[in-house]
Image 1 (spheres, helix red, strand yellow):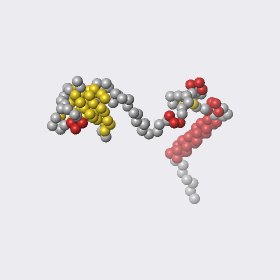
Image 2 (image 1 turned 45 degrees about the horizontal axis):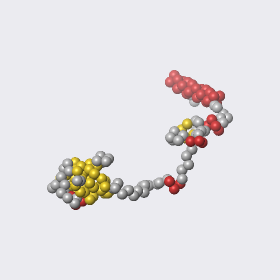
Image 3 (image 1 turned 90 degrees about the horizontal axis):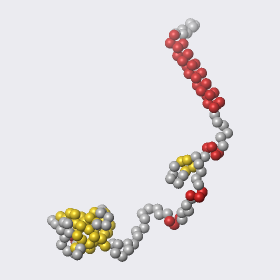
Length: 151
């Protein structure tokens, strides 16, 4: 049987493979020498501060706040009962379409736009009239009810 011919290309590939193996072995040896074995638990520990950021220093126990379990609200917060007089507001009608019977009132207290329908008005209203009204939450946002002209 004839001896296999070694071409220049085969030798070149073998040399590259051997070189890559040697480099890999050197890197492995270097990692073993530079490994930091025996790190203490304190060196590996990370803490979370009061703002939720990771830090290397432990939190200050003097800044700790106690929170009662009953104060934590999960889901929609409970509706608060409005104080008497708080539910009546003043505003100016910024837009009113008489044909369709709806418009918007700008609340003078907080500049919020509130929807108003002609069915919730006790008197005839027009644009730029000053009115007093109450607010209730509808499916699409705040609605004005019990709308009356301001004196």
